[in-house]
Length: 272
Ligand SMILES: [Zn+2]
Image (cartoon, rainbow, N blue to C red):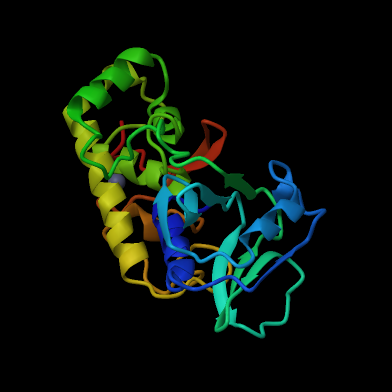
């Protein structure tokens, strides 16, 4: 599932066309991505200009007027891409916005993604701070731990109200850098260390994925696919995918289990 850096990379695909007018909107009305917003409502975007965009956690907001925004969630398998304006629709292209020069495409074969339209000025006014923002303070992290003392570390990291944008691979990376088992109760965490590693991995993921890649056209997100540039070999990222992968610190084979309902990789030697 795309996490904050992959979502930011996806946003940047469409952001190339800020300032472009939308000539036509093509939808698959029965696609499940329209469960929050009937597909025909998207026609309101015809004739509008894509002015700006932003990402927050795992969601994106594309602004067409002060009170007209298209919100996109990629879900499990959603992708944003662009193609020449005469792009021939692929089977899972559930939304295509065509400008004079390009087709802005939302493709999602599993359809856990979702689309929403907002007609207010700031639909994101009450979202929690993202880990990479200055508002993700030590006091905030102390408060999160105090509110969820029994919650396992990995579950706390995956809580989108606590750490928006962090998903499975980033959570494993943070646990590994902390040297803590993913099931460690939150009450045992040191707030300053937790905040430091959350921010290191969030800012590092943005740097290594969103800033170093220019396209996001292939399938999936693993070393060698979806993007050509991934976090370096001294991150857990490059080792956690494959069976028999080893810890970049101690070279012992990584352990795997299901924790917080997600496949989790960790080092039994380094993470006690
Ligand atoms: Zn290790």
